Image (cartoon, rainbow, N blue to C red; front, side, top):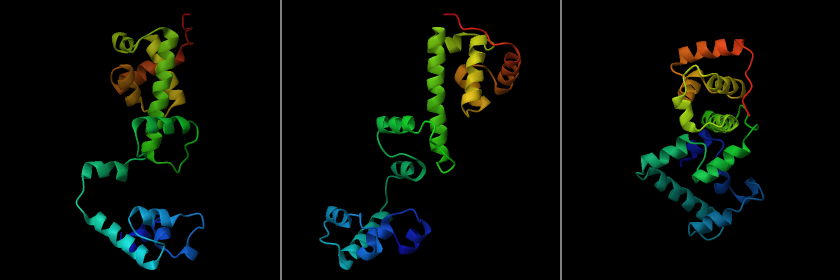
Length: 185
């Protein structure tokens, strides 16, 4: 990566790896990284060779689809690892987190809520599609999703089979005006 690109992306640690030992945090293990690339010792020559190697790799044609995940995604790892991170993020996401991460966390939370609500009602997933769009139980689930997540009405309507977002909005508005029903035990 040319030095000017490293400067444009200040969050990269590459500048520290290429810097002299006195200009980087003491805890950084540059020798390990250089050793992984077959470069012996933390010397100016080894660091320059490492930089040339990375620049050559950057210029190589690559699998653009695989690289897309690195450029646009928030997580690199297995599906299980991603799910673990999403669970850990519960209630901890702030403004500094990416929109993709926040959206995915919202979707995971929504699925947990839907699972709880289905369980309380003794319903299966298929019951959401089979029940009427104006079903009181479905509307109660929708109301909870509106209160506890940032899902859009369009997403809720689609997930709960409530029809169009506009008709779901009307049904939900009317349902929230009425006193809540108790779920049968």
